Image 1: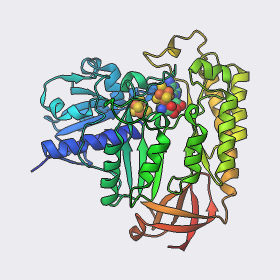
Image 2: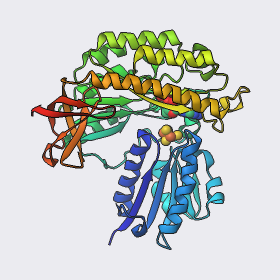
Image 3: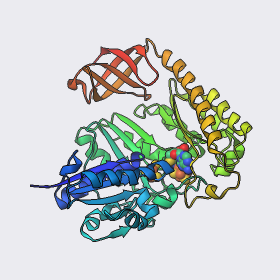
Image 4: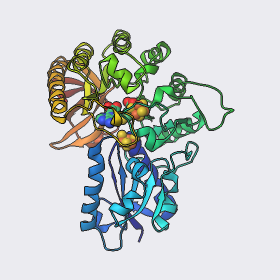
Length: 435
Ligand code: SAH
Ligand code: SF4
Ligand code: F3S
């Protein structure tokens, strides 16, 4: 009987991919199989996020749940970004935890499970050329890392302290991954990095030829069998004309761009060290709308960053009104350890932050209702990925609308044209008009 692994993943797509790597390592080298039921597991892993305080709290509440449900001799391991920043402290705070493995040390998982009180949270460790085994949670969509770490130093953000400096993965490794994914049935390639359009800035192998993200996108699109390419996260600062041109003109690149605004105020953007102004952001967003018909622009916004005045917040609302993002992830600023902004004097009271978040989200909900309604009667090509209840299937259009229609598992992994008949805020319902 094989050993059983239960793994929970919190956080971003990079963590999802790290968990896939962990599963592959433990399957290939240690004979583990994944189970859904904690009480049958021999090893329980939690892959953590540190980006705001909330997910860190979640780590400790989840450990409490594991303690109650686990087999007496099952081991608990903590991986990911909170492992990186809290390290040994986790073992002290939660004695049932056996090991702590940082976000940049995934390849050491075999050693971690065999070593008593193992802690390794080295953020200088270079896994950019490590050959992980193959495991993917979705048969149709393949996450592929193109870089590790982040070279920016946004003053609110803990990620550079949990994932270290940015190193690009060599293009031949990425292309091999793409080929393997396509050979095993993937239709969509999802390239991952904290700062994808900074690709090529530094390789481990100094003799590698210089190239940028636009070049990489072209290379990936030339792999036979790749039907769709998505990526996250690009940085607005690096959205130069060359990048926008490749994005607009390459038919395999999905017409959905994440443009993390963070704030609409140039003063706050400066304090955040984002490197662009309100005007630059608007210029890039308008240019994108002009170049790409039906482009979907998503964003991340932080409200109540230290020093944010009512006028600064108005600037954020102004950008949201002007760009009319198709999707917005918005957060109240959360002071993080090791970051500069946590030391800034003018911290904003929590109730003001909550009010601003509500104002922003209400504004965006209204915009989203208008955007959704305008989809009535349009036809989109959808790649079906999920079975929903009541004999329905769901998938995404090229420009990232979530679209749902009647159908069964026969449709999974297939493309079909869907005419929108009932557009809602989060999901557009429709009928298949062509398969
Ligand atoms: N590399 C990505 C961001 C990864 S973190 C990028 O630059 O877009 C994901 C999002 O979490 C960020 O875009 C930001 O909006 C939010 N975030 C990061 N640190 C935060 C903090 N201290 N408080 C609130 N939100 C934060
Ligand atoms: Fe954090 Fe900024 Fe790097 Fe994104 S670009 S991960 S927000 S430091
Ligand atoms: Fe969270 Fe780490 Fe991703 S802090 S958002 S899991 S890079």
